[in-house]
Image (cartoon, rainbow, N blue to C red; front, side, top):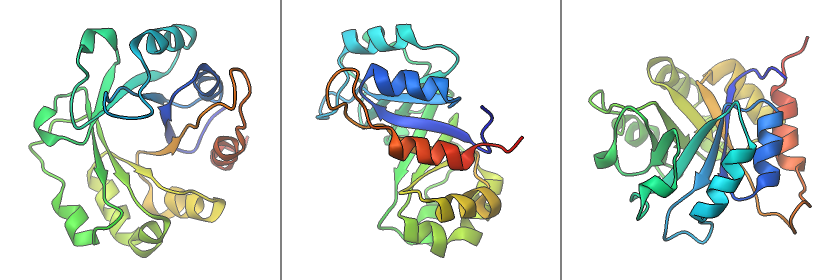
Length: 194
């Protein structure tokens, strides 16, 4: 399945989400490996899940700090909110839902050596700042994370044109039982027409 934009599915905690995402053609799957998070994916679960999937980039979502033992989490890329921990295999996440566009723009620094950025925006910010975001995305490798619906995705794809988007995985009701409606809707909206 070809998608109009690159997609990262973040906060994946179970094999069902990971296999579904990989099968639907997403580019990246992110696993929460932040020791202080209630959604932490333990090292043995991380290894079990990542051994089942192929063809996608694996991201370790660390938040502010690296996990206690990085060797237990062999991710290809590391997503952080801490600009002091960056390298060429980093993704820098900006949670900016309460910031003005000027404040958002000031966060970007040409000295940062990152694979790409993730901007976590409210749906209103995406609509209100769409032209400014388009200009920002023309100059920086940005993934947009928001509360997507079909109209908002149309604005993102046709006006803002970021490198990609991020959508979030969710918890399984029980092993093997999962409702994919939200993820499926977004991926269906992004599907290229043949």
